[in-house]
Length: 286
Image (tube, rainbow, N blue to C red; front, side):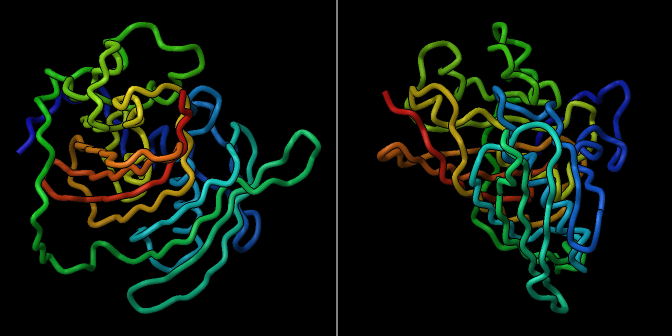
């Protein structure tokens, strides 16, 4: 079992957290939602893909009859910017145990034209209604105790504009995956960390959509630098996480022709595999 982390002085609760406020959508009409994308979840100047997935996930949770995301597949079409956006949802099918819907997020460009940023297809169900039958060979990642890991506050001054999202996260990286920060990347394409929200809010199925895409890119440990934009991201949410910090492990096995995959596992404080994901991302070579 993981060692317990020291609790923040005042822990936020689900529904009363910055994450909840910044992913909240307002229903304008059936299937149409407005949101002001927060600049607090940006990397450099682009809005983080996991945060955006949580925004669309919240809209789909309102549009569909089931509460929890089971599988969410997103294609990132253009980079989103902080500011007003519209989410349009469509119910594809509803069943007794699963319902499926699609959603797209739109913003306006400098010429006033509507631009689609992300398109999502997702299936929702009720994680609380699933049988407690787990048969797995998967094992939690071996990460040192949190006090032996390092966060953004332990490093040098960040690049201007790059640290907004890290101020909202509790992120403690495994030293074995921090070679890139010291100028000596391991070449292994691995990233591991303790993860949580900075205000102490416990994880839920929606915040797991953020967790799979919130660590530094594995490309850094392959010796590459710069922005690594997501092309496609699929997340499987397996169960509701127990209270306490999460452990996230991400690996890349194949970087070819400027694209790489990232496979992520998210484990809770009860040693349960609560989410898995795979994404395809672009990297800049040379």
